[in-house]
Length: 244
Length: 273
Image (tube, each protein chain N blue to C red):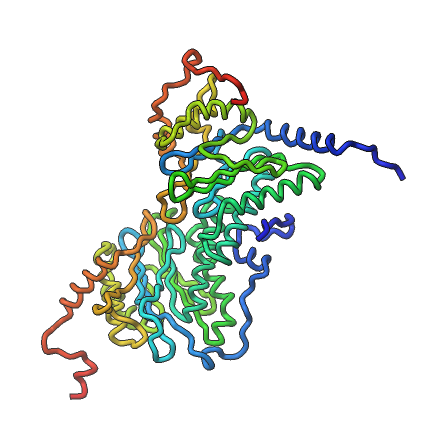
C-alpha cells in the first residue's frame, strides 16, 4: 500500500483557491447596482445561456464562472425559495437565508470535494424602501460579502469595480444605471452594444414579482438614450489603483 | 430548510409537484365517504366567456356547507400566471389548495426552465392535477375547475373545461361549472355573440351569475347591503386583471334596473296562483 505524499493544508487550500479563481477569471463579468427604483443587474453575455435569473418575488440570482455549476445552484435556489414559500408564506422567503445556504454548500464543496466550484454568485433582494436593498456576493469558498450600492462578479472584478465606484451615484434612474453598468463593464478600449448585454431589474414598485428582464426594443431604447457619449480613450478617466 | 440539491438521475426537473414528493409533502389518503360524515365547504358557480380581446372569468362569492352559507366573500377566480386564470367549483379546501399548487407549478416551471409553458401545456398540467385528485373526488371532495387564458402564440383567448376524472375539453366560446352552471350556462349561451367587447362580456357574465343565483340556493347573488359583488377578471394580451368592485357594482345596478318590471313576479311564484 502506498502512502500519499504529505501536503500542507495551507498548500491544499491555496491550490484549490487558485484553481477556482482561474476558472472564474476566464469568464466575462457581471455588474449589479442600486438605482432609484430597485436593483439593476447587467452581464456581458449573449442572452442565450443566462447568467441572471429570478429566484422569488423580490429575489434575483446572478452567477459567473462555470455555467453548469452556477445553474445547478440557481435551480436549487428556486426550489428552496418555492418550497419555503409553499410551506410558510411568500413573505418568509428572504435573501439572507438563501445566501447562507449557498455559502454552506460552496464552503462544503470547497473543503470536502475533489474540486471546488468555479463560480461566484450574487443573491440580490429589493427592499420596500431604497435603503433596504440587499446584495450578497458569495465566493467559491463560501465567503459571503454583504455589498451595498453595487458589486462586480467575475474576471477583472477589481478594475471594473474601480470604474463602478467612480461612476455610481445615489438616485440614478434606469437609463443612468444602465449607462454606469455598461461603461464599467466595457472599459476604456471598447463599447458594449445592446446585443452583448444581458440586463434585468428588480423593481421596488412591482406588485408581486419584482424581477423583469430588459431585452429587445426596450434595451435598444435604453442604450440609445445613454447620456454618456461613446467611449473616447482621451476623455476616459484613469483607472487608478486596480484594487479601487 | 436546507438547499435542495439532487443527483442528476434523481432530479425532479421543472415540476414543483415532483419536488414536493421528493421533499416528503404528499397529500393524505382518505378512506370512506368524507362528505357524508362531515360538512364540507363548497364553492359554487363560475363562468368563462371568450370575447374580442381575450377571455373573461367570473364567479359568485358564496360558499356553502350543506344547507348553510359558510362564507359570503370567498374568491373563486384566481390568476394562474400572467396570461391565464383558473376558476374553481367544488370542495373549497382542496380546490384552493389545487389553485395554490397550480400557480406554483406554473411559476416554478417558468423560473427553472426560463420560459413560460404554452397555454396547452398549462391546461394539461391542470388536467393532471384534477386526475390525481380523483380518489378524493370519489369520496365527495370533487374539484372541477375552469381554465382560461390568452394564448400569446395564437393571439386569442381560449377556454378549457374539466370533469372530475381530469378530462379536459376546450370550449370555443363559453364555459360554466358548479351547482348553478346549468342556469348560468344557458344565459351565456343565449346572450353570446361573436366578438363581444369587454363591457358586453362583463354584462353577460354578471347577468349569468345573477340568474344562477336566482334559481340555485348555493349561488350567491349581488349583496347590495354589504356591498359584495361577484369576482370578475379579464385575461388579455396585457395579462390577468381583476375588474374593480365599483365597476361590477355599477354594472349590476344597470342590470337590476333593466330587469325590474313593476308588479311582476318570477315565473315560479306566479304559477301557483
